[in-house]
Length: 140
Image 1 (cartoon, rainbow, N blue to C red):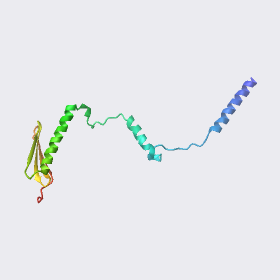
Image 2 (image 1 turned 120 degrees about the horizontal axis):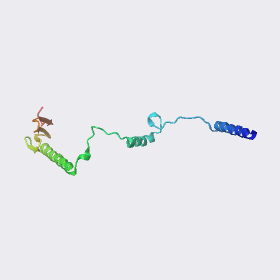
Image 3 (image 1 turned 60 degrees about the horizontal axis):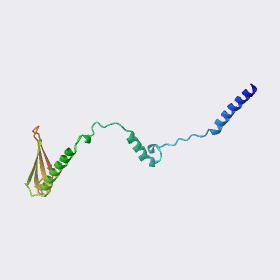
Image 4 (image 1 turned 90 degrees about the vertical axis):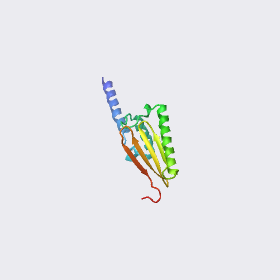
């Protein structure tokens, strides 16, 4: 029994002394560069946060719902409008280009000097919008 008590006393003494020997000063070192951490870690932290973010933006467009045909038609329409605008910018005053679709009619009229007027008619609502892109020389 004495040996057992002595062994327990020795073990508890070792635990207490080893705990004191391993204790040291705790120093706070920030990781985030916003709070004084290494600025080279910022990009890594941002990438980690973005990879863990599973929230969806409710206002973000869903491009996955467009088929290849939809994307092609969108590019085609953009090309047609771009060509009509280029004709109006480079053309003589009064030159008009028209683009018709099932819901829109777009008339682009050259003002000369690089300016043009775009009239957009929404056929479904009857709403008409006129946008002036510059003026010809001598107009105010």
